Length: 402
Image (cartoon, rainbow, N blue to C red; front, top):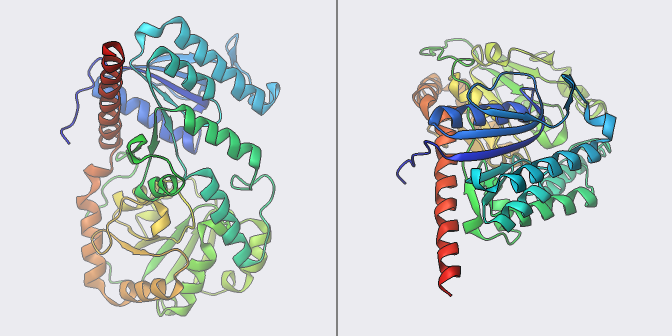
């Protein structure tokens, strides 16, 4: 596909959280900044901002007299509903100044329905797999290690949450998913393929600079970066590590806090002399630049940003098929099926014993850096916008001719 020009394209971008906060807000702010850089005319409607978003028109729905109003002041669900109604009202009041609406979860069903009624193309960001799939896979992982997920876990099965998510899926003209894995979870549940666009995410290449050639003569050092919970597959990673030869001289670093009930199941692994817990790490890039590989055997992901960060840092992704990583098997990294400990053992042995393989994969990671940028991700997003707008115009012309 030829990259579409988006100069002057009018985007209403709705994000029901604080832009610039950690987590998904990092994705949102980078998408907006990159769209502006491409020439789009972006109106960002968020609850509040923690960072500047130069070039975008910003509307803050939970800032009162210069002060941030926390979601809990209204009740989280009410805050989401209020944001959604504000965005829908803004759209209704100015229908002629928006070409495409881009909305985020939990606070968009009225916005999406209003856009549809006004004949405006509207997409819903899907940072995770289909919610039903995420619930099922997280529950499976927890069962396998013999614990129950706490009720406040993001993937704790909740039928009200699922129903709300499905309503948003159905209200959107298209779903923007970050990986082929995520796309598959929707197709398996009957969502038409032509309503799903894979746009991928990105990495701030300034924050994760090119480390230069990596030719390590040291024993293998790998890192697990993420929350220590069953669906991230830390138990799979540790089991494979101690079964492989890599643990004999190598190091396994854990960056992230571990769920207490899960920690009890991992006690023997965590006590292994080659395993080092680092807790929450603010500067993940410094760790990735010192490691040979990132290990992430997730059961369910949309597209884990840390895999982009690792690849940009020439740190080899050693990931499951459910990670949604921007990684090609035996090109930039090594991929295994979810829960396949035996294959992961083999792959750890390969990395530990074949320095030429390690150097080749690391070199390919460096070569892929430009493809991993937020600019590249925004161009794919823009291509989807333009395609949807064209489809929308075609549908309107057909309706008028009938």
